[in-house]
Length: 125
Image (tube, rainbow, N blue to C red):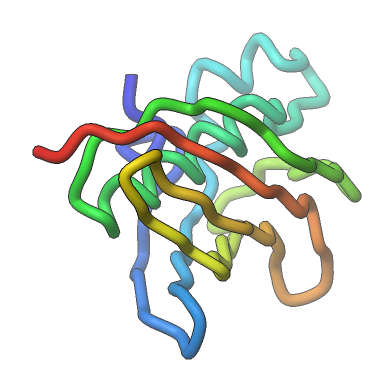
């Protein structure tokens, strides 16, 4: 299941000076929220990481396989609401023969939800 095709809905993706930003909307009707947690849903951390990988895959045009999470700090929970806008800000993206690396900040206008440093193996399409 691709999380950027139903769990999150991509509004836009734009280049920045040192990477790119993707703006997404939560989908509070997605089945994952019915299980995590019924009556008080929050976005699972693994889904936040998976969405970051999918967005980076789209940007780099290659299949990525998570190798290492170098650092991760969950600072606040994402509570799904209709039309809740979330921004994934990617920076320090490095690609070489060993894979791809990126730093990601997940936020909205008033909260930082997560700061993540990821390393992926990749396969060119």
